[in-house]
Image 1 (cartoon, one colour):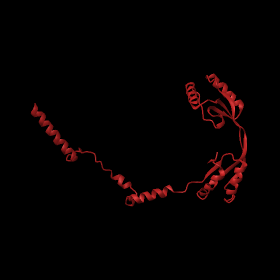
Image 2 (cartoon, rainbow, N blue to C red):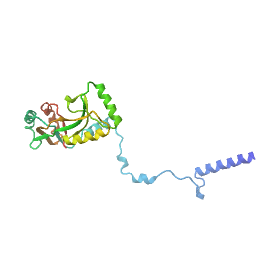
Image 3 (cartoon, rainbow, N blue to C red):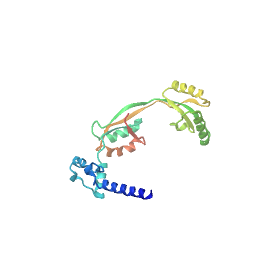
Length: 218
């Protein structure tokens, strides 16, 4: 029995060797060819492919990164009359149509407010209580109300009171409605198409903007 098993193994190995070498292809027994010549035929100018040295590749990457950005619209937040006058002195020398200063109004804002608290530790404790109740909160925009918390801002006192009543149903007991800021009037700066030629001039605006950032137009 052992001899028969050894003989069968030898025959199987011999048959596999003959099959793998294509010796049985005349009888339709041969492994599938892995080469794909059709892919070679589909190549377009393979002789044009060139491996770049590392220094040339870096140079091309830097060149690509420095490509011109598209023009963008920028605007400044509400400006006082003094700030607007200083900005006008800078932009008067810019191309016509590249800037505009227009009257603007920042509406009043009312918030559902919690505070003032004696210290930061109390604020953190109140935050934990609000998280437990599932009530969202946000930082205050008016420094005179610190330390405290805003539970949402609204364009009218009526809207803020409605939210206050809804929060009371959730268990918020110590909040109240206050005016975070009054209506403000001033000027708005708009730069409709800041391109590569105009971007270097933005640095000249920084002192006149008095710390107010330029943001994407809305």
